[in-house]
Each structure stands twice: as C-alpha cells, then as structure tokens.
Length: 313
Ligand code: SER
Image (tube, rainbow, N blue to C red; front, side, top):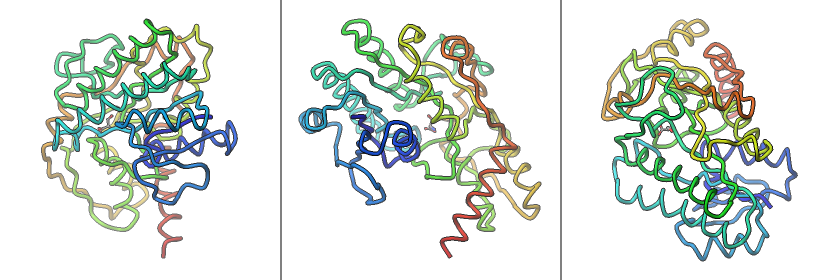
C-alpha cells in the first residue's frame, strides 16, 4: 500500500490521483487531518504529528511507500513559526522513524526552493549551493533534507526528495505559499476580476506546472536506486517568470484583464529565493526534463478553469 499524507493539499490531490492511475485504486491510501469527502478511494484521517496514529495506519494497511506531503508552507509558516516548525519537523521525523521500524521500502519527501537564501546564486542556483533560508518553512526543509539523508545513510531507508518550485495547477488550490499568486491570477482572470498581486511586477521565481511536478515525483520514485545519487534533495526546474509576464500572457487571450501590485510581507520571502534553479543533476541522474513553459501553462490554465467555472454555474 502507498500512503499519501497531506492528500488534500495542492500537490497531494493530484498526486494521489496519478498514483492510483499507475498502481491501482486499492493500492493508494490518501490521508489528511480532515476528510473533505472529495476522495473517492481509501482515506484515513491521520495527524502525522501523532507517532502512534501514524504507526497504527502503517501497520494496518501494510504500507510499503509513503509520500509525505503534509506541511505548512512559507507564507503561512511566518504567521506562526514555532507551530510550523513543530508540524513540519515532527511529522517528517515520525514518518522516517515509523518507516524504519516497519520496514517501509520508500519514502518521498518534498523539499522546496525555499531552502535557498541570500547567499546562494540567484540565477541557475546549483544543487549544492549554500543553504541559508530565512523562513521557518525553508529552515524546516533544510533540516528535513538532512534527516532524509541521515536515514538513508544510517538505516538504508530509501528516502528520495525534490526541491519543488512554485506549483501551478488548475485541479486544486495552493494554501499559504509565496508562489500562490501564480494560481490565483488565473482564477481571477477567468472570472473577469482584476488581480491584486502581493508581489512586485518584476519578481521572478522558479515555477512548475503541476503535471510536470507530479511526473517528476513519480519518475524520481520509480528510478532504479543506484541512479539516486543525491540523498538530500534534487533541484528541479520547470519555468521561471514574473507576475508581469503571466499577466501579459493572460492578456493575449483576455485583453481586458488587469493586474495591480500591492506587495506585502511575501515580497521579502520571494526576494531571498532564486529566480531560477539549475537542475542538471536531476537531468543527469534520472533524466528529468520539464515539458511546460509559460505559454502552454497559460493555455491549459485558462481552458481548464473556464470549464470548471462554467460547470459551477
Ligand atoms: N510554493 C512554496 C511556497 O510558496 C514553495 O515551496 O511556500
């Protein structure tokens, strides 16, 4: 059985479906802290900060793989740093330790571009750059990457990890991240509203279309073990763009769309992150290659969201 924690989240929603398509409906157990009732297959409420609750489910379903997606993201994390630290680090340690004790074969741990800080190169940030994050989310991800590597080296637990850029998708909403604007902007455009952007017009950040993000995860987890040579986390890139560039791309199809800029505390977070990351290692080790650029992302986002909003009327 494959267990997904944080299955109600932006990535979890879509990854759970992709895993079911690949491995079968009855082989994937979705979990989260609440049941939204929108999950068609197996679902368990799990608070992964509770070691015993997690272990109970792992034993009950004979879990052999865990995709541990539950976490508090960058912007929300800054509103309650101690709680965010506790949730992000405790849940990972529980997942690693339960996996070790119960012979779980593989664990996926999502890291983030948030691991980088001011002293990493801004452009084409290499995989092994200095990691000096300034958000509690970024600090917890650096910590998590090192724990992942520790469990691999010390206990031979096959933990694999990606540093996701901002994820852009139509199937689910992000929650509490600094890159969330890149999803919200499409929703506002489709419903005909102006968009108030919390980042400045020229804030360039690494992003990835959700289909690429899900495919990267499945390809990383499916690669032969000897190909995984980085046990902290792999940079992966999709595309980099600014709010202004997204707005202009949208305006090609919706010329009346308007954007205004009202930067808030999230601007400081973004200013410390890379503009683009170098994913040569992922390309070389397990053949990573993104498929989507800003223009194809925009075409799909506008088309799919128009359908969604039409259905909702
Ligand atoms: N999308 C995340 C965030 O903005 C970055 O990993 O917090």
